Image (tube, rainbow, N blue to C red; front, top):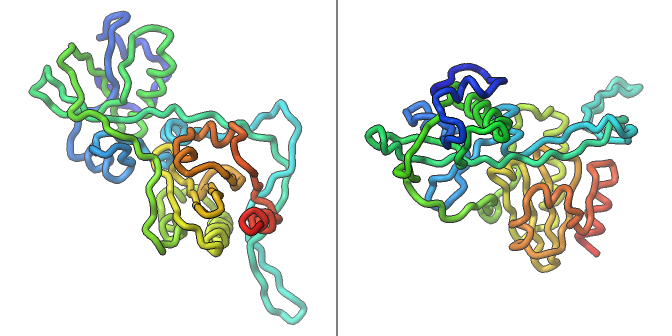
Length: 306
């Protein structure tokens, strides 16, 4: 069944053509518009270029799917947090001075809700001239227990493509190419400034100018210690950066978009790169967690020079 609307609330009526306990896929038929969206708004996640992850800035469903979200816990007392703020002051001589500061405020602590982690892949429609489909990398079953996941995935596809469709397959339905390897991190060329990679990115649509200034300051400061390698995340790690100091066995993880802390790891990069975002943020695996507060430079310098 084809669905054309902004989002759905009820699932049952959109599964009317699927038998109870019947299996199906959710996705879209591939045309030039779908290919264009795939090129602009998805990260390629495997070496054969057949597995794709929507980037988080497309909308709230893509964000929840790809990077998760932080939700305020109003059952707990407020705590001191920090936000970036530009300021301008005129001195007694009439000269203006300006800058950006971390301003403290009281806010509820936030709990991290992990991402859904749904990928998209190509599929051949063997029942209709082997037409090419782009579907979510999961077979769904028409049972009440799956309705929440089905609703989420239909709304995810609607958000991205403005249409969604359910596809029923017999055993002949198959992937075009097998998945080989998911690569959630990509190394940056030596000497390429990480800020130059992020500064014009579409991910910044919801980041204030004050925040951009402080992000650039953080990245430039970390790079002043001359890391051996730098990685930026894609897919679930979109917006995240890792600075590798191999000789010291120190790995600094920061975000250009999400969260409010720098994470210091002392394990190998190979192990770190395999951690899920939930393990990084909630696993207490880091050597040190440095809040983006006025003291962050001093704390980071201590870790990188001791």
